[in-house]
Every structure is written in structure tokens, then in C-alpha cells.
Image (cartoon, rainbow, N blue to C red; front, side, top):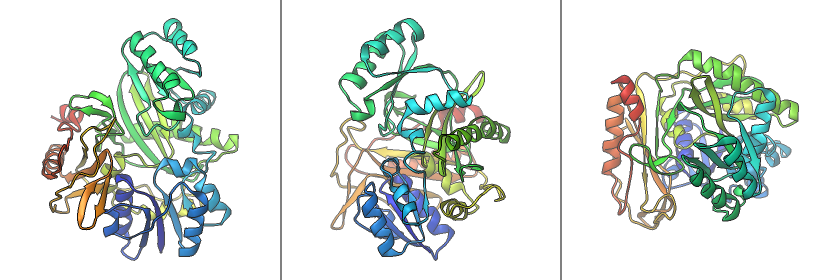
Length: 425
């Protein structure tokens, strides 16, 4: 089987690693890929969000499956073009991908479908958004850019002044570009967050094991929001009963609403949840595997990933497929980032990368080759995942491995999973 994997980050490296380990007969192509993926397959130079180029490459290489990693190609309609060409693709169409690309539209869809979520209003004019904060929401409050903002478009504001500043930055200063053409003013929810993925054929779902992401740059959840500084799985409060509740109250009603709207969703639906005193509520949806949660989740998988992905891509139903199975123990992923991340990451810095055993997997997220030299090329450079029989051992091993990766300005959090550490002792 020949698979074309689109993307170049840590999520894509984890997908490539998982598919390669599951079936050594898989011939993997990655576009554009990264130096880590290059050890598993052949890299091809392509702009992943160019539908015409992707279809041409897939036809030229006669691939059996295209797996779309990041959100940008989905938003650009790559899957739509592949479907027209009758090439199996794992990922939603452009219309279905609006669950991530338009927080405003998705909020409306959730409220109409009765999916539990926070109350919110959508605004395009800063004055109106500020009036909503002043008279109807108060503080704390959450201000969100409606469009794609690389995981950084959500600002939790503890005061009215912070909210007004966030509104100005999004709507007037356009710090998130066109993603900030409109913003959401959303009620603040209390509780713990949980990331729950589900492979879906548009009707049925195969949920994965729950994970918890760490968005803030610094230990203790301080500093600015990032695309994610680490994750761990399993999460002790993510019980089978909770997963069943989320399936019935979140995944299935959302999929029904998307079918009813004429944009059925197939691929990987990611629910970012808040476990509130009133039960789980949706913070946001993503239309693809999350990063860095994928790097923590997939190494724990002991059943097939390729089988359900291929079935979905071919238009088959997955309702009778067995549930995913997972190894015992825990997995912790620590992101090693560049100096200046997230605002102005320093790139082109030489990296010294030691060898690690199989219990530690180092996923390339922002690296490139210059001859034989490995250099930084992005804000998040590596995702370092350690697996162990206990959470504490996995946390320690991930932190220790991250500390051994050497490049000038390297930074990482030393407390990934700190809430879980408190829960499990």
C-alpha cells in the first residue's frame, strides 16, 4: 500500500511512525515532510494546501490513500479535489472543515443542535464586542478569533481591560490576520480541559483515549498561549462513562447537524472539552488530529489505525469495527521550543540530537537539513514522548529526554501533566 501524508510537523511524524510500525509493507510518501519523517519514507516537494498539485502528485504516484495532517489543506479543499478524482482521502471536505475554520458558524451549529457549549456572541466591530463584554458577559471572559490561528487565537481575559485589549488586537490590529475578521465573546467556563479524538464515517464514531494539552508557554500554566507545549495520556478522569457521554451528547449530535446542513464530516473529529460542574461542554472543535496530543496518544495504540482510516477514506461505515485498544501505563509528551516562541521564534540554529531507546520517541516538529547539519526551522522544534508503566515514570523520562536535546535557546516545560501528578500522587 502506498500512502501520501500531507504536512511537515510533529503530528505528521507521529502519524508516519504509527502507520510504519503497524505495517512495514506500507510505502510512505510525505509532502513536504521533515527530517524525522525522511527516515520512514520518501519526501516529496509539494505545497500541501494546493489541491491541484496534491491531486496531480497522488495520480502520478498512484497512491492508495492520502492522509491530511494539518488544517490548512482541509480548509483549502484538498479533500474535495481528491474526492472528485476518486482518490481515497482521510479528512473532511472544505464545508465540513468549518467546524474548525469558523468558530462563529460552529457555535451557531452547536447551539441549534443542543450540543453543550458556552454562551457566545459573534462580532465584527470592536465597539460592539466591547459593549457585549461590558453589559452582558463581564469578566473573566474568553475572546476568540473566529478563523484559523494556529492554536493561538483564544485569549482568556481576567478583567474588562484585558478583554478590550484582546478585542482591539483581534479585530483592529489583526494580529491573527483574516482569522480575526470576526471574533467571539464567550462566557468563561471553569473546570478541567480534555482533548477527545474520534475517527468518524459521518455517522458512527470510534473514540480514542483522552489526553490533556498544555497551551501556556511556562510552568504552572503561566505566560502566553502557544500551539501546545506538551500533553499526556491517559487522563484519570476520562472514564469510559465520560467518553460514552461525550459520544452521545457531543459527537453524534454534531455529526447529525453537519449531515443535515449538507456538509457531512468524515475523518478525525477533535472535541476540545471543558469538564464543568454541569458536565462536559465543548470549548472548540478541530477537524484533524491535534498537536501535540497526537504525539502522546498514538504511541499508546495497540490496534490498527490504518484499517479504520482506510475504511472512512473509501466511504465505508465503521459502526461494526472493534474499539481501539491501548497499552497499559502512560505517555507524556514534552515540546522543546525555540527561543522567542511563540511570537518570534529563532530559526537556523544547529541542533545536537542524541540517540534514545524505543521507550522514548522524538518527533520532529520544526527542523530542516542543511547538508548533514540539523537546524531549527520553527517555533516548536521537537515533541519528546516517553512511555512507562506509570504516569510518574513517563513524566520523568519525557522531561529527562527533553533536557538532553541541545540547541541554543531551547526551552521546554518541566511540569507537563502537573494536574495528573496531583491526582495520582
